Image (spheres, rainbow, N blue to C red):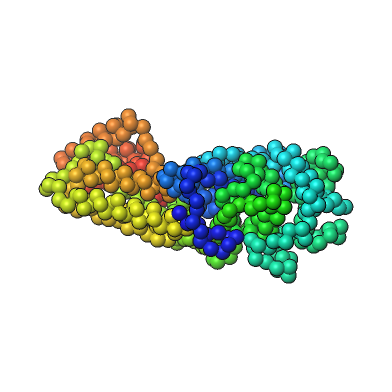
Length: 472
């Protein structure tokens, strides 16, 4: 399997020989609800984990929450409540949103506030090695003691200042030096050997990554906006402390744009996941997040969402009709012809999909293969000759394999409700045969209203599927 490494600017083979990978993903700063940009990064890594799982790879996956930050404190002051209430509120909203998006849970979600002792120990280690120093406003990392500074972002000194998050402080020895510990008299603060304060932004992830995953992790990830200064500074302080490589591979996900403009809370063009979920189902959101190569920007528009809703309907129709035909034994009529070749095509399609994902998560081609597979299934389901149960079962199993990796999920319904639905469909079909169309329409309306389902009539039978926001 290959992934693009931002550090080396090349696509590299991932060593899977030990059947285990340690991955650290920079999480969100919890001062507001998550938006579609957060969703894209987290869903890309979710698909990566699902793919690795199918290959028998155990993934130790850690994703932090930054639960203390100037933005959190500002929000708390604005609302007149404790900073912890703010962070707890948005941690809860995070889990609500990403549970709805069918994202696998991380193995650990460390909080900055629960790792202050580790952070202080980390900083003291840097001071002991003369790689950090005490200044008027806090403790700073000494960038001049890390000659490789800039190796991730490929920035030189002149490129490091415009429009990036560098603290301007006359007490610093070098304008590139960054805060490890910030002195503050305003809470929340913690005691330290150097004075009360709180951690700098970058030190948090280094301390938690090393604590949970060891001195060298396999993959470190996040959005492309974190390459500089956040990840650059993580490398400097982590490698400055342990003396070896911090992460073997750095994987970064491109931004979500709107009309080719970066989303920004300051200009008010962000799309919150919770708001989007009111009109767009989780499956369509996931399809959007994998609609272009993960390293490239993806532009959000209503037209794109409408197109993906149509693609989802095709996926759901194939799934529901296959399941219905198998359950009701609606099988072959004219003999099994060329089914071995058809089964080979199923295997070949999935293998092609898998191969494209193994090639640096090549979503554009992989999804094209998937959509083509779904179109072929739907064509076969409309052909005059019915399909054998074994072929339909193999098709459904293969469809589920595609969907499991992408993280698509069909809403379920209780078995007793399924039996009730199909009992009334049989009654409706008889009414239609008896030309009692008004009564048949009433049964249809009652079923759709009570169970939130859609009926699809074929010549010889009627199948049904659960409706969702993905279909609207």
